[in-house]
Image (cartoon, rainbow, N blue to C red; front, side, top):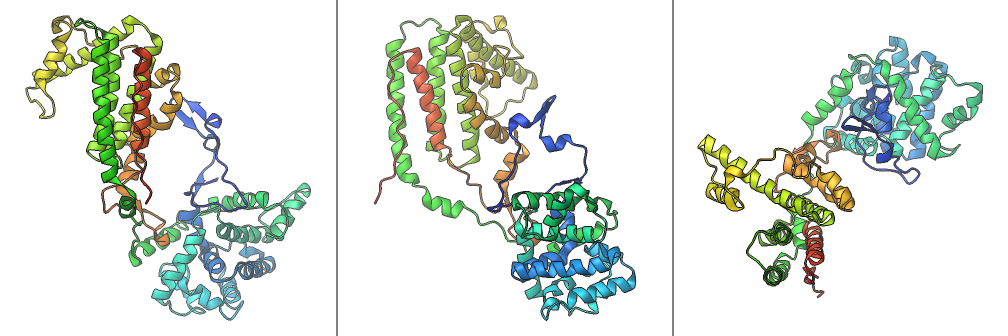
Length: 500
């Protein structure tokens, strides 16, 4: 059994334990983390187990921690004297015999003068199991107060490793143990003491994870009927409370963007660089004959430069399109360096012939379809197809021009780090993968009673700027150009905001 809940925050006592990539096991085209390789079923703290100990999350928020833990120990004493009441979840209490259930509710509501006030938000839920028994001891809810109180409690306990959530999970483990449902060997005396005296005994960095691991197991015995109650809590919360959309960073971010001055700087830079590249090409070129290496080297550099220029010209640095351009820049750089490192004349020709073949393929398909897209210049495609030789002699390669994928190319070109840094994530924006869609068009609802669910964002997305990354990659392409046809020393200079 494993906790299938979202991460939120971590305490100072514990660091998040994440498996490294090397610890993942490759099964065909899938990398599986260590835990997913085990045979267990999933149990959700947020969806199922947290709402089922509603009284516990209310207590841990309502009182100072020491008082709440004393209250939990008070519950444990009841279970010790009534071991058939070991399951202190809402559904567990509903399964008690009638007299035991009344006795438990009387016990829990009479601990202190404000116990009933603390528990009152439970009355917000009409479908709570055996609610009539609770109504005998608790007042009617005060919605405007109790929804807020419940929200504050949920906020502290949504993350299953938070201190507050662990405290609530501990009282469940404590009662299971005191009720005789958890058994320990003689060698596990320390473990028993750690649970009994929590949080005052033992190394909490070890005790807390142990408590969380133990707490999951009993919940696997819940029936489908029992699981309906937690689902109803979340349904009621959604129906009765409003969404709190995540504060958009667009407005705040735009204030930080010195767009006009940046744009002026980079437009001057791009004008200067373009002239410099063209002059260098004219100085380097010595013939009108086809030179696959020379035209590709300058082509890569100018293409990368043009992509960067479009980011600036059209203000795409914070946009989705900017991420797609960043991907193209990375692929351009990897391909350029791969070809340069191979230093094979036939490979340069193969790269060029592949492009001509692709132009021919699209041209012929459009001929067959008879319905030309407005975005494609069919005449230009025909020209490119015929440029090096008559297209009737141009072959169409349906694979790759060197029968290798970009990942392997990046490895051989010594650019695997750039591939890992940029390519995989930005590819998601090209393909419309869920991660890219999630980042771009959804934002979180900050109402904890809505489980921090997703809402369509009300504004156009504003991500992190791609300008500096794109600039660095473009300058890397210029370095390769200088290596292929030295010297070329010009680079795009980074904009530095003037201090007032």
